[in-house]
Length: 388
Image 1 (cartoon, helix red, strand yellow):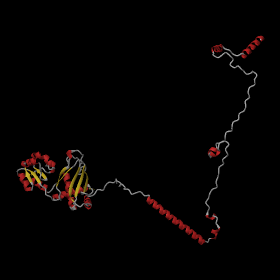
Image 2 (image 1 turned 180 degrees about the vertical axis):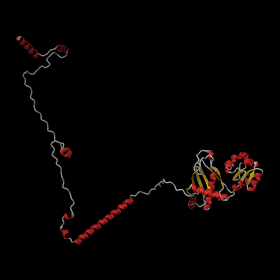
Image 3 (image 1 turned 60 degrees about the vertical axis):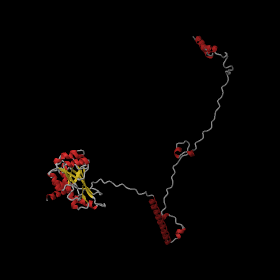
Image 4 (image 1 turned 135 degrees about the vertical axis):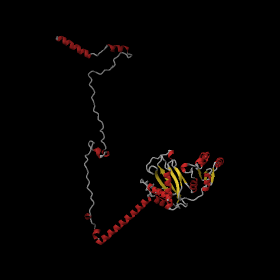
C-alpha cells in the first residue's frame, strides 16, 4: 500500500507540471492559418527575478483660500483658524457734566455763554421755520387737481308734506318767467294690463283759466233746442254726422250726445277718437241732462285717464292762483278720483290700495309728496262747499 501511494503522488506531480492539451486545442491548431510554432519564441528564463516596484510621489493638494470663505463656512473647514466672538465697546453719549471743558470755554463769562446759547437757539429756530415753509411749498405743489365728487345717495325716506305746505313750497320755488301750471301725478294701486280697471273721468275745477270752448251736441228735437238754449256752438243730428263723415274735419273742442244718438255717432267714431272727442258715458259726455252737460262743458272741464303705467297726470291750476284756490282744485280732483274708482277694486277703505302715492309739482319745479290724510280733508272740504 505504501508503494502504491508513492506512485500515485509522483504521477500527480508530473501531470501538474506538463502543459494541458485538450483535443479542442489540437483541432484549433490544425485549422489555424498561422504556422504551428511556439507563440512565445523567447520565453523568459525560469529563474529570472521579478521587477521591483518604485514608489510614486504626487504633488500636494493646494490648500483652500480661507479668505474667500465666510465666517459660517470657516467653522466647518478643516485646519481653519479658530474664530472667537468679537465684542465691541458700548458707545454712550457723554453727559454734559462729563464733557471735557477746553481752556477757551473756561475763560468765558456766564454772560458770553448765555449770549452764545441764544444765538444757537435763534439759528435753530430760523432753520426750522425755513424747513417748515419749504415742506408746505412741496405739499402744495404736489397736490392733485380738484375732482368732482359724486353726491352720496341718501337712503332715508323723503319727508311727506301736508297739502298746504306742499303748495307753499311749490309757489315759493316757481322761478320760471311764465305762469307755471300746478300738476298732480298720482300712482294708482291697479295692476298693469287690467283693462276692466281703467280709471278715467272728467273734472270741473272750481278755479280755472277762462277760455272759449266750442261745444258740439248730437241731438234731435227738444234735446237739440235745449242744447242751443244752453249755449252749444254746434248742434245737429244725422245731417251733422254725414257732414263730418264726408269732410273729416272737426271745428269744436268738446263733444256731447244723447243716448238715442249714440248708435249713429258710431259711424264717425274713428274721426272722433283721433281727436279724443268720442262721447263716453263714463266721462259724462253721454247724458240726458242736456242743459247741465252744456254748461259744464263751457265751464272748461278737465279730462283725466290712467296711462299704461297706472299713473294719472292732471293740471290743477296756475301758480298765479291763491293758495286756497289751488287747495279747492286739488279737493275737486280727489272727489272726482273717488267717483271714478273701479267697482272691481276690492278694498274696504277709500284710498287704501287705490291711491299709492300723490305728488304735486310745477311745470319746471321738483315734485313734493303729499300725505293722503291732507288730501282726504281737502276732498271733504270741497264736498261741503258744493252742498252749500
